[in-house]
Amino acid sequence: MGAGHSHPLYLPGASVVHRLPAEVKIVAAFLTVLCVVATPREAFWAFGGYLLLLAAVWVAARIPPGWMARRALIEAPFVVLAILLPFTGPDPRFDWAGMSLSQAGVLGAWNILAKGTLGVLTSLTLAATTPMRDLLLGLQRLRAPALVLTIATLMLRYADVIAGEARRMRLARIARGHDPRFLWQAGATARGIGSLFVRSYERGERVHLAMLSRGWTGTMPTTGAPAAARTQWIAALAVPAVAAALAVTGMMTT
Amino acid sequence: MSAHTEPAAAVAATTTPSLDVRGLDFAYPDGTPALHGVDLRIEPGERVALLGPNGAGKTTLVLQLNGILSPTEGEVVVGGLPVRKPNLQEVRRRVGIVFQDPDDQLFMPTVREDVAFGPANFGVRGDELTARVAGALEAVGMAEHADRSPLHLSGGQRRRVALATVLSCDPEILVLDEPSSNLDPVARRELADVLLGLDRTLLMVTHDLPYALQLCPRSVVVDGGRVVADGPTRELLADTEMLRAHRLELPFGFTLA
Image 1: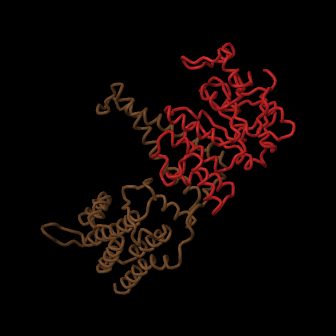
Image 2 (image 1 turned 30 degrees about the horizontal axis):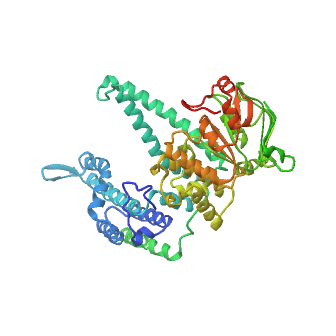
Image 3 (image 1 turned 30 degrees about the vertical axis):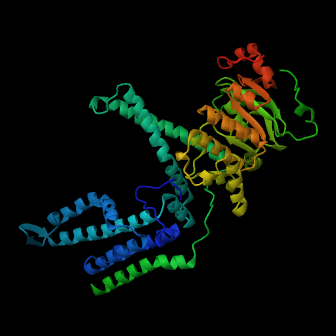
């Protein structure tokens, strides 16, 4: 891909993982997450295994762990909820470091934390190795609903156009003495958002006309790359296969 | 309105016109009348400017040409094919409309995908599609930008890519809505060079009278939903009375003898 749509979660590269077709990676990531979720929370070692598995993928994709860790912070708001559980959970309770903690609460918090973090890391790994455009093409080849894909494709293109429009409107307000820091001037900002909505709606109409004029009939035409090869499927599905082995062992031993 | 004096009109009897609009009436669903008895015949290879003030009905007329709007009375025929529901897909391939704002026209994530969108919809696939895209981008001088996002192109480049998106459909007639708006002088000239080099039938909607003179030997003036003048561009633009009557004027400092 060119400089076009490098989203902040994408790490440009040419590794084995980067070169795999997007649909293969989407399926592999989805199956891996399923395995993680299906693992009993008491099988602590299995979660360590998943982390090692992901680390192996990062090595193959040449993603520095620090880079990954910074982006994983997106999980933080959900972690707050998990931290409350040991204090608010039901009895029986036990004392630790001067605090009275709920046994079920601690296990629940661990469950959310471990599975949530592994899920976020898996998604981030997919995002880091696949440009947005390829993700959409991959979903298209996996036969995701056409309407959803059309909306996502247009969003990919117009998010920046609309952001640009919002920026120009803001400049025009500031140039006429508007200072959005004052609460009593919030009205102007609110009206600005309203008119931005109307403008975007009108643009939507015009884009629709332009699409019809070029023969659009309701689905995006598929263009480009041939279907993924069998060896690529095998390579990518090795990851969820290991994950499945971990999950099954986890279920048997607890 | 004077009779056609063009050489192109003389051979009209033997060839199928690229565009033939006959007695076109149109009113919007709310009853607002927009077009009254419009007649317009464009021969293959002609370049025609469609001039008129704001609100004259120019854009409404353009949207009739590929069946986005349907006439209340009269008929539009494109290369011998009447604009009717069963023919719509083929009509839309034959009429390549380039809209005024390239951000409306270019909706795909990359230039290449956008140029491929039209022909892919019309059933072109594989190597043929690749060749069409390459040919169209080559024709507008944008081949090296195929994999970029339209967002990262200059205004003039976007305009030329917008042109490529319809060229790739191999249209019978190109219809451009205000092609010179928002372009700096160099981009304006570059676009003119591209258009003159295309050798295609062209209908150009514009307020930019010098641009019309540069590109189109023939002009049609529309006002109040009617065709009020049709003739050689140079003659029409020299008729200051007529121009003034229809809220048109040459930019400051321009005169035509």
